[in-house]
Image 1 (cartoon, one colour):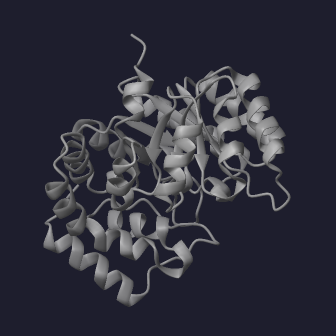
Image 2 (cartoon, one colour):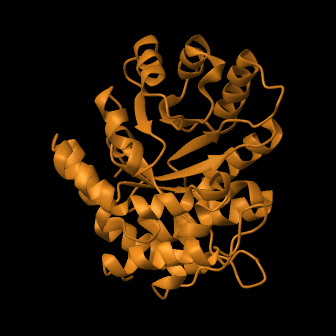
Length: 299
């Protein structure tokens, strides 16, 4: 039975880590326990090759393998969204590979090219859409392209959603008002930013916490969905130290914090690759372990 992707995107988009060996080779099979725990907790959709999956540190072949592995581990229980990006040639190649692997949708990373033109971004998304003919979620990390350009991106055939990953709720509201009302707008800055994004009409949020403590992510989503902002605020405040660790060193400990937390609760998933920081500093590790102990987090 096909998934209701629209409904799933208004839930939690869990971004899966990429397990690695001690010598930093990908270790796909060790992803399955993380997938199983997230699904059992009630996470609505899982993403392979997101930023928490170290997309930009992976070779194309490794990214393809991690998408195939995620499809094997998920086994159709929830929708699988596959991250694609880099050059337009690479993005189209990854899109076709993801479709062959059984992905339900694509998440297009916003190209980090310093000379990306707004109309060039539209052409980029059109090319990827035509390459695989799968529903597309835009991953927007830079809103300086302007509201008009964002609306043009949303008008590309196949685009069904936007993961909004800039801390600008008012610009989000402008983009929503200018775009197709059927587009699903997802908070792309994890749990901490979900309430202000919900306040302007976005629904759902991305999460790296689901790799470690998916039950808390599900509880936050349930509170927000029911309009219980007081409970959501309390639940978010309690997990904020985790996000504080991840935000250090210019966000260079983002994935480091997730993998260090998995190690601390006895589920080693290997180190990160440069240029991500590894390991945490002693102070960062103490902050993380205090957070884990305070909430008795186990795997």
